[in-house]
Image (tube, rainbow, N blue to C red; front, top):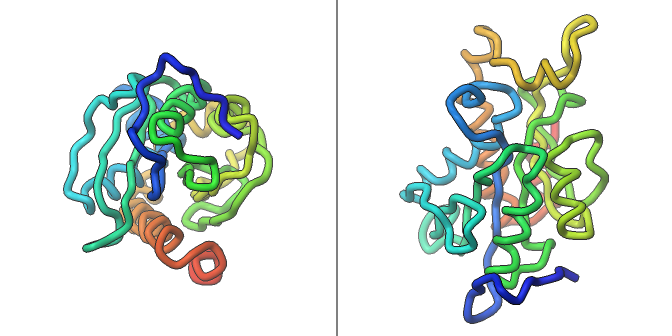
Length: 206
């Protein structure tokens, strides 16, 4: 059950579509880092929907509203927080509150160091596995029962700190394949909202 603040604006009727949020950090200094791959996938989905990012009425996120996966498509709002990764829960909960959407209509796209670069996993529920964005969302919603598209960025080399690793840019070799991985992750989101979890896992979980 989502706790809703009465002073926040809300949609007139409950939302029958999906809320899809890409995680990352705002600003040009973070734009090309591994931690921002969720933003990259959300940007790809926004382009496919033919929309541009605008400040949302909830006041805590940028959003694109439209139809995902072609015409007539699936009613979807894409979201990106206007805050740092470790504060992601506020914008996500604000979007869900606005649309009166439950967590089982939420898809979160994020980086995952425990998955090899180029692989992805789609799942429902689970812990945060040390990911600050997921931890913040789970705390704000009071549950982890939402969908995740986990994009592999690989483990840090040697003894490099994991936080430093995810906040560093992709290597030159990784960048050559990055667009393809972003498109595949966007495809998996479209599959998830149109065909369901099982078929999407069978097709995309490496």
